[in-house]
Amino acid sequence: MDTPSNTTSLEQLKDAYEEARGKHLKLNMSRGKPAPSQLDLSSALLGAMDSYMTADGTDARNYGILDGIPECRQLFADLLGLNPDRMIIGGNSSLSLMFDIVAALCLFGTGGNRPWQHYRYAGTPVKFLCPSPGYDRHFRICEELGIEMIPIPLNEEGPDMDLVTTLVRQDPLIKGIWCVPLHSNPGGVCYSSRVVEELASMETAARDFRIFWDNAYGIHHIYEEVALKNILDACEKHGHPERTYYFFSTSKITFPGAGVALIASGPGNIKELKGHMSAQIISYDKLNQLRHVRHFKTPENIRAHMAMLADELRPKFDLVLSKLEMGLKGTGFASWSRPKGGYFISLDTRPGCARRTVALAKEAGVVLTDAGATYPYGKDEKDSNIRIAPSYPTLEELDAAMDIFILCIKIAALETNNS
Ligand code: PLP
Image 1: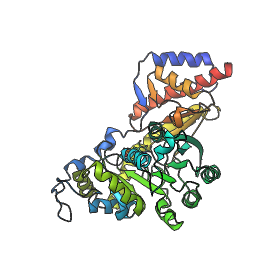
Image 2: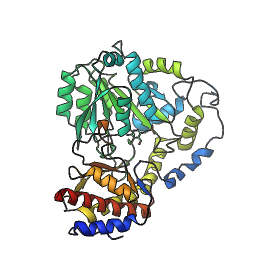
Image 3: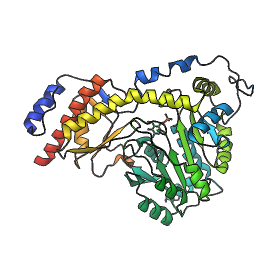
């Protein structure tokens, strides 16, 4: 389908839309799932087990080693610049570690401070700062646990730090901030060293203020390798060794349904978490940990694998970005991110047009992430942000989906002109 030119009338756009709708397409750009071709690059992982004994002679099939086998902790410590003794390898999902930790803080508190649920039941719930647009599932954790969310503008270098530092200094009920510090979901924002330093050093009214550092895209470079300052080292340097919980997983390295996830933090937090976890589980899946170690062996091999995944993703990002350029550049109907890596492109329509655009696209068979999902409570005040996830569809599907999407952006923009 040809995308109508920028000077096309609303009527002509609607004709093209009806034609597209008549094709009953079923296209999906909603969730950041790897395509089967990306998963295939990790197929050898399934056969990577010649023996089930770990380096120190532990039988990985059996119970034991709550914090994960040493060689797996060492592999990820070397990859990410972390301390293997201040790390726990969990199950397959970092999100579930995040939920468990926030829930534990609600139930038990940390460092001898009050459990956060105390404030909830006293009618003054604790609050988290939520750099936005951000990851909808972080916001879901807060909603589920009764934590109030404060949206914070996310700028090119990271969250608006003037606002962050002012709020955390003033309000002892602000207990946390969500951060996706590299190739953020959805804007592709990479935190600068200045922002990392400020987060690590800032004064907070709450003694139990915590940074939830979700480095989900920490090695997921597509166009450009971006360095990230080590937040745990920075926190330690500034006298706040327990300020940050650092999360990572191989969901978008090997298999989202069967990777390994980890948490790294200060010594006090790790001790506390092991205490809670020992009531929850005897040990996580060590066979999978061992499988990942046997398969990758070194951080260099993981990085080489990421380069292959980037080669799979780049043509899809190229296609989406060139379609947006061709279809929308100079129209004033939308602006969009040009990420250096990660999984998403973030697009802003004219104010008041995102919901309508997403609804029109859905009617024509193109599913996008719900408008508003990238903001706390699903409330995008400007009704403008839409997340594009190009990884899963084939190039042909993406091509067709983007034509319809661009058509819908134009229709929604012109409708508001006319209203
Ligand atoms: N964090 C971010 C920022 C994500 O985008 C995603 C998945 O899209 C996750 C966490 C989920 O990670 P996991 O599969 O390790 O639970």
